[in-house]
Length: 412
Image 1 (cartoon, one colour):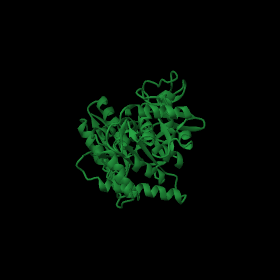
Image 2 (image 1 turned 60 degrees about the vertical axis):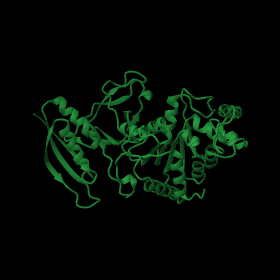
Image 3 (image 1 turned 45 degrees about the vertical axis):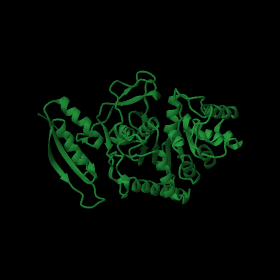
Image 4 (image 1 turned 180 degrees about the horizontal axis):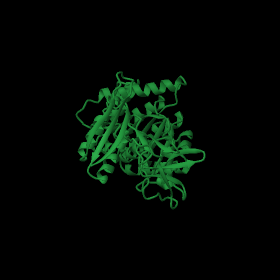
């Protein structure tokens, strides 16, 4: 039997981290002995545990260590991390360390170094002089970059239960269409008001990120979302070509993909409206010029331009046009989204599977996140892909946005 001591510390009792680690050891076929446990006696106190893991084979022990590392487990014998130079541009060493979206440190020459802006499914680059470490997407690696390999000398800090007593404090990702929504939306509105108030008072620069799909326009959520943006509650918008195109189509023609939003029926030749909209905006050169010229007078895009919202429009292979602001190179679009992530204090992912998963991959686990979709598979997929901190709401986007806007003070 192979024995390996590991330690975990922090809020491991009230955040159920110790229980998850012990459960994982047993589920994978190992056994354990709690050789030392020190439990904090007050809410703000941390706890510490030393666990002796026993496994019949080295392969099973490595599997157990791999599984419990995201919970903050550290092999007691501290060693520096190992690094290897990247063999070519865009190619990582075979045994590269794949990150999670949890706070991470690496150990180098006896010192632990923070790796800023956690992001899942990327690598870690070590720079010896000046000493630093960065998250490194595969496509950005250059030949010779020192890349962390293996699991030695890497530790992550598990997500602890927040002090706030709102929906984000439960730290679960259960998804059900039968759970009440009102208290969740009220907590989201409370967070948005707090972020806005801190920005007004100069006490913080937190941002609210909104990632949305065109169903928001089709389902009737355009007016509510435009009000939320005009009121200053949204600071970053991620979307694709379709949301912007149909929003401006609604401004020009009163339709969304040819369906009249006022009288509730398809218009003759209405399917051309979004193409004619895209063509007119392309002729002007940008969405900003379409707003400033008076072509587009209302809606989500107009509100974003007027309020200085940072917009990233990422294209797909199915896009018509696209609009001139759409980034058609997916790597460049991902880089633009990544650059907008620092400072996000709340993320709302509404009615867009691809943008929800893409944004969830970029967000650190510490960012409170809400995923809203009428299809329960979307928030479930987001959780399964690693964004376990996301709160899932199964409801249509229009109902969510109208209720959220009213919680924020809208009289519409």
